[in-house]
Image (spheres, rainbow, N blue to C red):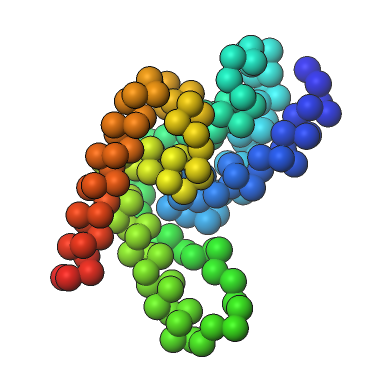
Length: 166
């Protein structure tokens, strides 16, 4: 195992893994899970064959850990995502509130989607992984990623439309 390589991957991908896990678990408190991803990467480094990029391999580990964590907790309240990415620029309190409300609504709607739609929306739409990278993480064909992402976006737009008119 090359500890320098894992350290390099941590420096390069830890923020991406953090964002992914925050969206996936609907909680900004995922630092322990991020650490666990890289601990598992160290433990399983011998199983990394290089067939995929390190980033997609790490996203796969992160996704599996998030699924395991959700199973441990049985049911999580998807509505408690705290907006950790809001910067306090030169926006009025009202603008900050509206932006926070919009983001919270979007997070809530994303997490009401069925799991396959949620997975592909987070990976392709939020994390901006390529079709090939998302296919690697999800263990799907590239065509399934394309079709599912298209359907997920339609479902998301429909649900967002309902929320804004309720």
